[in-house]
Amino acid sequence: MKIDIKLKEKSYSVFINELEKIKLDTKVAVVTNPTVSALHVDTLLKLIEARECHVITVPDGEKYKNFETLNYILEECFELRLDRKSVLIALGGGVIGDMTGFAASIYQRGIDFIQVPTTLLAQVDASVGGKTGINNKYGKNLVGTFWQPRRVYCETTFLKTLPKKEFSAGVAEIIKMAVTFDKGFFEWLEKNSLHVEENLQYAIKECIKIKADVVSQDEREEGVRAVLNYGHTFGHVIENETKYSKYLHGEAVAIGMCMANELSFTLGLLSETQLQRVKILLEQYALPVTYDVKSVESFYDMFFLDKKSFNQKIKFILAKNIGGYSIKDDIEKEVLFEVLRNFEC
Image (cartoon, rainbow, N blue to C red; front, side, top):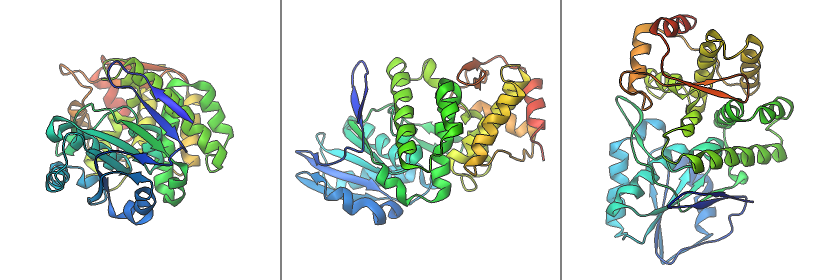
């Protein structure tokens, strides 16, 4: 199956279970980590036809999504004498995809890259749309670029080796899209297990279709694309507070969705029943739904490091009923404190 991402300058396609041969008349470097390399790099290398093909291996984990690792990738590119026609291939999850895309966007002022996501989270969200970036001490993905891939290959066979927690983290992003964009899809998720192969393939397809539509409308997140950050404003603070070591990204987003839903409920955008339905669906995949806020004031202050904050206003993406959304940047501090106190330890 092929889904097209239609953009003004650099349109491309996402292929689902159609990875056969990658033919490139240039030098290629596959960027991956030791965990993914041990499982999948040999499979991918057999499918690549290129003048030269190399593998760049970086440490595994969100804590390595930083300038040091980015610089290592760039130095390896120079050592391999990649040129402006060369191509990077990201083989891994969202961390690998973000860093490889960022490296590609700045190496010799920009070279092509291809996404081969190996996690559910990356297949349904991170690999599509051209966001690249790294973390720093101030927060998540605060340094980066918009750089669209040349193409994306989503192969469900790669997901069979995923640990349960990684699989569930991806499900959080699937639920995220359903809650804010598609009521019918959310209701389908309530009735159908994603542990069934054909259901999983359907869900991946639906998520990519949603994201393709959103990115085609708003490539650089100046409007509707911000809605894809539902759960992330709270989730990014949680990741930062826990130093990216306690929760996977999708797990933090799951908690962030629950916190955002409490805010939606307080504002009258979401009913108690709807709030509980989202929570129950998250819990079905063993996702965390609570968090101990140690300092309400500190948690609140960290909102202002979010990329969506502007002119000392915090932009919140909130669920409006199920299947709809509301973007708010005028929420009173007292209201936010009231919500955060519900999670205070």
